[in-house]
Length: 96
Image 1: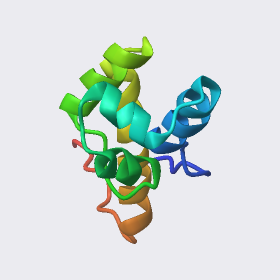
Image 2: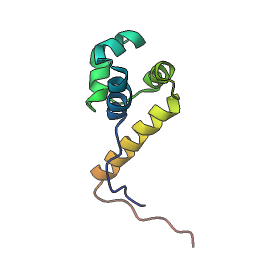
Image 3: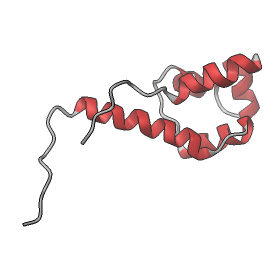
């Protein structure tokens, strides 16, 4: 299995840098807009919480993207971290 060389951009970084900053929104303003607690947005932005399916739907609806965009970004981070945490992997099974 091929390992990723660099850590993918997190959904939180994408949210902050590509959406909130250009739109001139604070995390609190955005949280109020999508009707969630600002702590949830802050944890996502700071990489302490994952984007859930429900949050992906909220983000997509409010930012004009798709839920898959947010879930794919989260999955890339999850896979990278899993590969980093697993020091040894089983060998590939081969059929005889």
